[in-house]
Length: 122
Image (cartoon, rainbow, N blue to C red; front, side, top):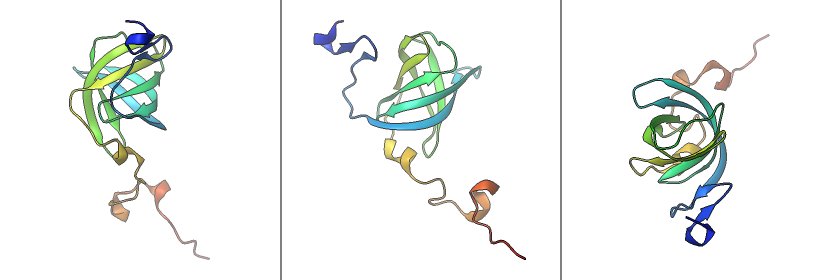
C-alpha cells in the first residue's frame, strides 16, 4: 500500500473514522491477559486508536486496552512501527466518553481521594 492508497509511512494505514487528538494513558494486555505495558493514546476514533507504547508490540496480535470513560476495549494491532501502534477495535465505541471529566456521573465516594474536593478545617 502507498500514500495514494491511504498509507502514511509515519502513521500506518489511513482510517476512515474521524479521529480526535488527545493525551490519555492506558494499559495494554494481550487477549490472554499478559501485561504488555503502558501506552499514551495520541488519537482516538470510534473504530481505533494510535498510541506510543513503552515497548514495541508486534502487529496483528489481539489486545485489550482500558480506556477512561469507556472501559475495556478489545481489538487487534493493525500496524506497528518501533514503539507506535495502531489498534483497530473489535466493536465501535463512543470516543467522546474518554473526554468526559472523571467526576461526571460518579458519586463522591467512588472518586479517588486525590480527585475529591476537601474543605480544610482549622
